[in-house]
Length: 453
Ligand SMILES: [Zn+2]
Image (cartoon, rainbow, N blue to C red):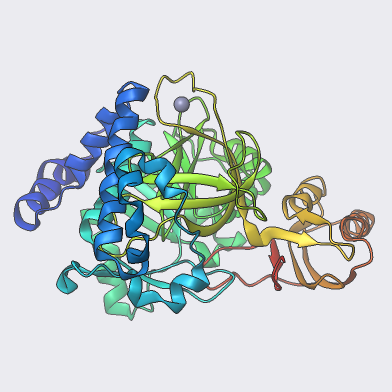
């Protein structure tokens, strides 16, 4: 392959420049995380313990929301992990209500970076972080990508939503910056069109990226269209990286078939950074130096045993400006006790069940996971896309986009099975041309519009 000059410039010029002029430390932090993955589990645990201890002591000292826990000081000094469990679980609504009390008194207001949660089900929640936190988020991503031979300058194509409402000039500036400072081009994920597939593939071939990065649902649709039209890239990618949404097994299979390369799952949240990254053995390794991950029972809030699914809590170890301890990010997951054959000591997540809101409730109070519906559609070729929205235990609506040349009996069977999953719930069915993507740019298969309990 010809040498990628832009990659060379980014790695030898852009990054060193940003480090010198702006004090950017992403490369140093990436190197730090990469060396940590080779530590023994005892050494690795010591690092986490120290970071958590510093954070908790800072919280009881300088963060109004946590000052009432000052009595935990000795426990924090002795065993910060058990001290953490004495702090309350933080929900998005509590955080939002008492937003300002989570801001550290020591935070430098000029250094605060404003961010918002994805908010695909509820309205976005504002929070603050600082550059230190963001750089560790980035570093965790680059460490994960390094397992696949990908570096900061590696050329990529992103299947992505537009970042802002840009005018023509801004859009041009944005794409130039993406191209020449980040070595990547963007194919808009909001508007993938079947009739433009040949054009997209030509663009990708010409650009010849090392990897493709995008939303799980956008990658799936793109892959389905490639397969439908018999299109292939004609060269080898290092990986297709799926992010921002739950990556279902059926989606992984489709993407792998279309692109003919490994599909890598990146699991993160805008308000939690990179939580876990898939290694070459297929395990989801937790970014344990950045985040303490807990999985607890949704009712009793007691810790779940390994392999058992519960609600996921994260404690960001780097955000001292607005700490959120045991933050309920809205996903269900299970932890694992096994060590991975890849040899890294970073703990492993057994499974990630995706948004908590994907759970549905039957009239007699049974919980049905949204995956069940995904599973049905996977076996029904006639269903291209669907979305089921449950408004109450007694009512839901199901929208279906049919595949060209669909078979009615397959559609009927899909509807019947969907009804079977929610017995007693009235389900209105609509066959539609398309299903609009949610505000965050993600396609959601399953939406529940009322609280679980
Ligand atoms: Zn591994």
